[in-house]
Length: 548
Picture (spheres, rainbow, N blue to C red):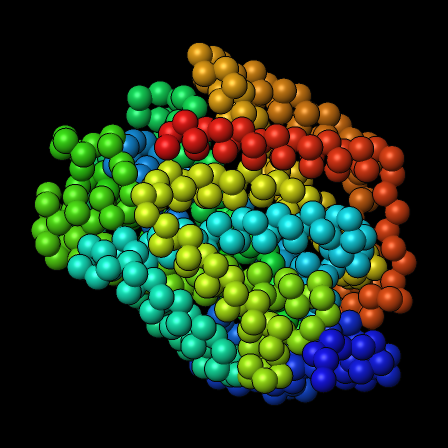
């Protein structure tokens, strides 16, 4: 019996005789969260704070999981590297990433709740298989490499505790599969909350080696780089961006919201979940940078990061054995929740593209392709880590930087979908949100361009290059402002009628929608972006090989 879902087999949305856009009937029904249940047809008003809190407890999950999952092994390693090699001078990057996280993921929240369709399937159906193949191809390559870094984290963490990677990595892989393939969304989400709580072990670790308050706050608000800007520091800044705001987050949260059965009625609660997750993520990241900076400042290890295992050993030597163990446990916890989230985002995307059943509400027997894909990715990624002599620290940093390089492409597709009235109807982006997203994409492209130029021309002055590119961005923003004031004020705005029944508006079946038509200018721009990002990724590989 095939797992594929035919159009005439798809479920119907409540009150609608047409087939719903939802591909898997398991995506419709009661919300069964880790801390509560909300019935599918619940229309009750929550007028008290206590009642609203109970709803939030039932809804909370996708936002926290995607954000904490992004503080994965690569994140822990990257933040520790920033503190060890550059002290507190890169802390300022983290507060700037909060609006990036919230803006990107809020758009994903709307797409998931309103459409009931995963990110990969939306791109494939709205823009064609060519762009869908590029999008999912990028995701698969990046996710596969990211999952490998999660198992690198497992091997380094348990290696510090004396466990061979030939034992720890296979056990971690089996545990991941067992946690995921239970056939219960609620059970899986409860597993994830165990790892979310363990994320707060950074607080007792900070107690062992707490940084001074004044330098910490100075690093948060004053931009700069210890030793000056150069290609290596730019690579690390891009890695911080890539590990904090990664493309896989878009695919994961949208599909996880759909799998949890969250509808437009509960969007504001899921927005709260997302904002809380972003604050917790940046808080933990800032503490990891500060701990590493305080521990290694004025020691022989300052400026000599190797990998996360070296950080654990350094903390054990310069702070205390307990501090080293705590860091190893934090790294292990980050590796597991990161691997669970990133692998699941890939399986969700494959289910979208190939039209197969893909829900955590299903058991292995009902979703063989979904869980088979998950298992295959875990096994292959774990096998890479067992290769002897691989430069684990360089691989980890390069993968996080690759995520930063590919983020603009993912954000552009996200923006196109969130301005598609056929898809989001009354939920399309407001103009100010498009402006913020445009700024995010342009700054990320500028950073990747700096990395490309400095890789090819290593003697170039990075500060002057950044100033020139910043001036070009400024002129671009000025031109954009003129366009907004003259022609663009009504772009992607909502009409008064959009406010009516927004809670109940859902995207119709995709086959009923008109395919968007791209202008020649937009098509050329998309091809140019694709070529540019391929070149940037290749030059990033060159930079990583040099560092290795």
